[in-house]
Length: 120
Image (cartoon, rainbow, N blue to C red; front, side, top):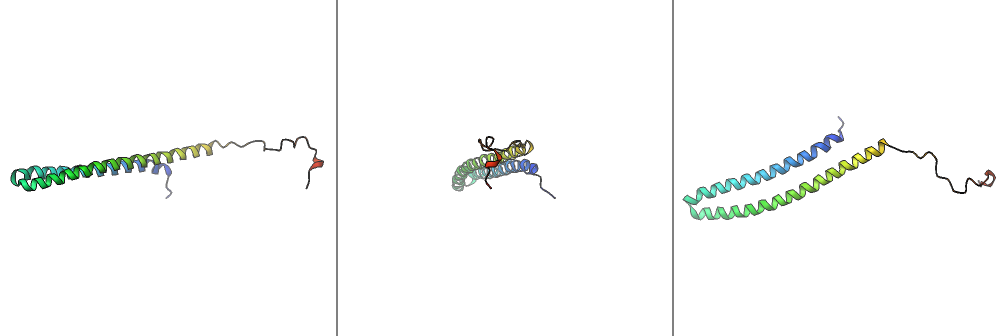
């Protein structure tokens, strides 16, 4: 089975978006679970809730850093994909509209010389 380049051009940005969504959703779910545990523990064991609050703060900072890195990677890869698509489109157009020069380049004085002056 041959691989068609159009499929790759469509699937790669979609896969990139799914990966970005999954990574950010996983981070948000983890923060939600720890914050729910912090609220629950606050009424029963205040000392442990302070520890989970500190973990929640550190995890939030980590999540912001991951979001910034994910945004950078997303923009970088998407620009590479679009550049590749643009290059493929230009190559296809150049191949479709191939122009051949009807007259080859000749020396400017070649029209003035007689055939007797040609050296072999």
